[in-house]
Image 1 (cartoon, rainbow, N blue to C red):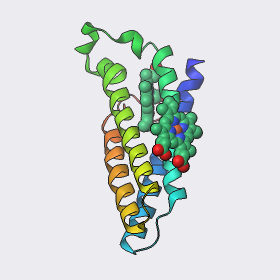
Image 2: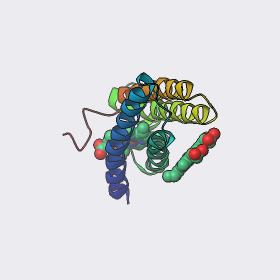
Image 3: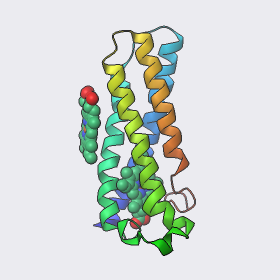
Length: 142
Ligand code: HEM
Ligand code: HEM
């Protein structure tokens, strides 16, 4: 069960990173060229983020690296702290930023403003996410 969830979480991580980069690049091109806002491309990033949130939350409660290792002693171990605290927290904040950006842009009639909003929120969200991916221990890379 946990192994399957971890594979899904790893695969969705790639899907999400690609979706965010594609959404940011296309929105940037539209913004620079004064073209209309493309909601579908931003939605791709939003759905990938929400799916990953659900899978991440499930893993958090079943993995020994998640809530089970939440303790004062583990707080001093940086890799442990990354998994039970920093990774979930920063990913959650990143996903909230993406959701807020998408929601705000949806309600804007002006395409230029909508593009700018998605650019700002998605780029900061992506930076949050990139900052706390467990790069050194990610099973796909190691
Ligand atoms: C912990 C689970 C989840 C939470 C807390 C959550 C929360 C939210 C929030 C706050 C919004 C913004 C609503 C708005 O103002 O437009 C939203 C939108 C959305 N979510 Fe989720 N979500 C979750 C899981 C999912 C899942 C599993 C999917 C599907 C794969 C999903 C798909 C969507 C879509 C498509 C929208 C945008 C709808 C639109 O166009 O306005 N979400 N979600
Ligand atoms: C932007 C969303 C996220 C991305 C891109 C992401 C990415 C990753 C990656 C690449 C790994 C390493 C997997 C491996 O080594 O096979 C991982 C592990 C993990 N993630 Fe996430 N994650 C996200 C959201 C979350 C959330 C929201 C939570 C919890 C609330 C979470 C909890 C965990 C846990 C507990 C592990 C360790 C699992 C284990 O090895 O037992 N993740 N994540």
